[in-house]
Image 1 (tube, rainbow, N blue to C red):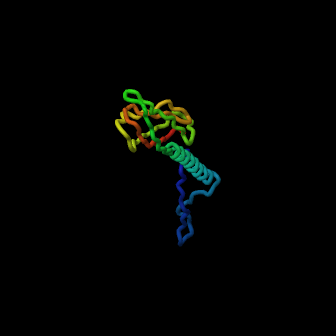
Image 2: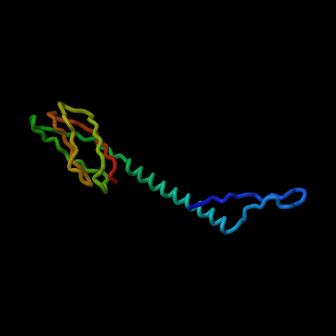
Image 3: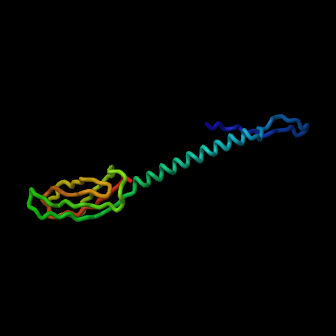
Length: 141
């Protein structure tokens, strides 16, 4: 672990020229220690940037607006649609945020299911004839 060197200037009495205070030695050990500290900071910054980049990737949002249609009479419903992701995921732990934009009837619940790395299914369980939803997909990258 880096231990900072307390650098001190050499001080001489102006009238006698006598060394009143010894300065810190400009030695390989002291400069090597300084190099170690700089290297530690550079490595810490690299880790911080990697973490920040991963955070940005995890917070990327893919947005799609789709219309679900239902031609059956309640309680039956055939509104299910497959949504292909624009960017395949490495994990199925992505989140899908749903915003109902418009609808023709009672939508009920909007259900996301059958998640895969390259897509998922979405449907509603109400009696509406149609529902337009905006899907915001985040994470899993």
